[in-house]
Image 1 (cartoon, rainbow, N blue to C red):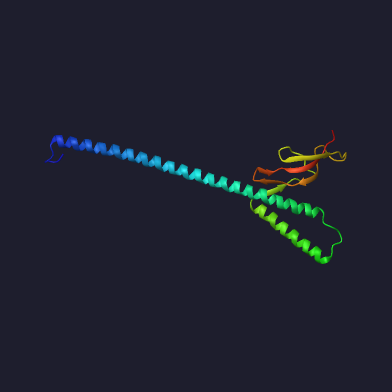
Image 2: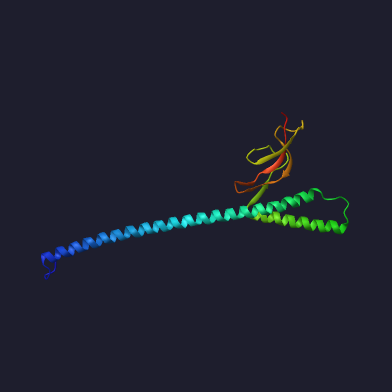
Length: 166
């Protein structure tokens, strides 16, 4: 208390300081909540961006898989005894196919499905069955279409022919 302040003025000053401290605490709490909300918003936006990128990759993958399937089908029926210039041209086309597959791998896509693997209903789509006694039951005998994964997600299951001994 200063010499000029009366006890009543001192009490008013103390009440004002107390009210100011309460306001400061209220503002500080509000700022902390706003900062936490902002951090949560940034995390949500990052997750959404990641999901959007993944969906975009899947969309591109579905379109490119069809093109690679056509290359694979064409390669199965490559004629024998081609002229040297036609064979060179065909090798160039297959190089383009390999580049396209490289783009798929750069996007994070992995092809799967191979002869000799065991059929897995979660990874493969059985397009047919045959019986071969020298092979294991449910063994993949032929791959009609390769399967594709993006991370752990199946973009397209492999279409296979399996051995059925039953």
